Length: 338
Image (tube, rainbow, N blue to C red; front, side):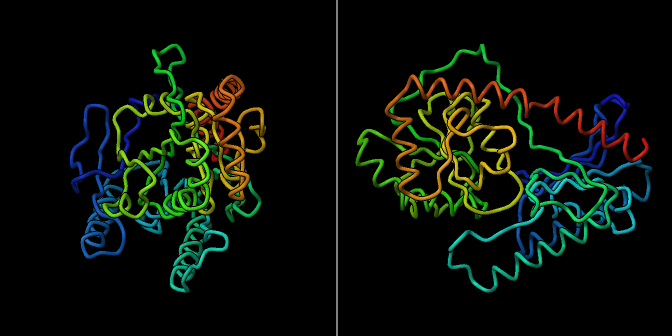
């Protein structure tokens, strides 16, 4: 196996300013930053420049493997190079929210996006999938389960006591399933909870559009925070009311490794059902009444709640820590002959 310092790594991620690193850094990394997403002229310009940059790098230097996370970035890899690409789509297939009034245009976009995901999966050397649900499996026999993993915080760190009645939701609120889930929770669950617990507050962490706080006035929006662990520590209950999307919901295991009591939708829980036990490690709910009852039970019984949180943290850390990913990467490289 190659040590990390022996691997040339090209990283493309999001940032406030569009930029592409032209030289290898001391740790043999080049980094490109995308600042605009979507189909705007500026987003398309950035995508074209990234495609040219990646094509030039691949033509001038030899790589045994290309690891492309997410469909948008995998599509930037030239088709002739995808035969040595390990495709890590995270959310392999997308779905519309159940029962939602989704326009025909949105449904067509989802279908086109899923068609492209299947095409790239067929072309790839190997595919990692994060959701073991049969309907989410990629159409490539050369595939393996790569669970989402999270960094496990130091359990001995100094922690603030949870604030009574403080509910927390964490996510990227430029992502429609997160917006839809938060809006549904605020409309259908929060009114009853705030009536039962007048001191309760709903806090939302994660990047969001400028109009969302005006649209969902029930929540306190904090945007990006530097110390996410501290926000988890202050939460009495974490909620993940995600009802659509694809792959697995990393926010589930992120809440658990921070030892916070969690209520998620059955949809969000389903990707972890093989490892996490309901009522022992976390709770799940679907209807508004189920959500209200689950949150009420956790807010009313702090001793039982914290016990469940400790068990959930132990299980999630053992199952979804970084060493799990290292094991899966080594297994993949062995299976493809490296």
